[in-house]
Image (cartoon, rainbow, N blue to C red; front, top):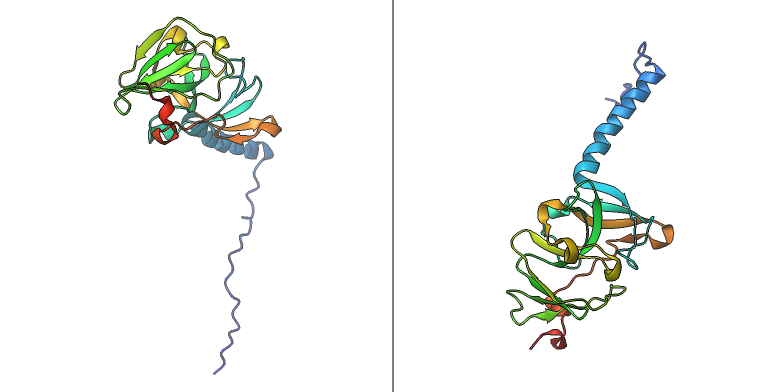
Length: 211
């Protein structure tokens, strides 16, 4: 008995169906609809592009830089101190601002003599926030703000040229669009999570605590 078979082995190739040639315009329309169905949900719920305009985040970000904003992470994790976020301006939701999170729910923030002090449950004696990212911050009248649930205090890195929580108050969590995920332009400044700084107890030296 022969072990060889005269039958052709099955293949996975596809052949075009005869007699169904589609008009080129119909193909374009179909492709456009598919693209729209894919792109719109991504832009609404996953990631969204923004272009920086203004100087409030110098030197971390500059005008005309192209950023992609992660809109998914905050469904699973709370916004953290040190992260750079994009949000709807509380006084005009049609405008988008980019700032850095300085205070999170439960914090009491005091700003005095160009210095930010934070008191919370983990640090009842308070600590001075070390901010290597700021460009400048002139001394200003003392101010104190205590944050409740879903409330954040944000400031620009270029403090003297920034409209932020010092001027218009706390930011509600529902106004946050997402955090800066990647900088795509200019090419020499391409970066992942640009500007983000993780501030934890391990990073605080004993000298930063208030006594």
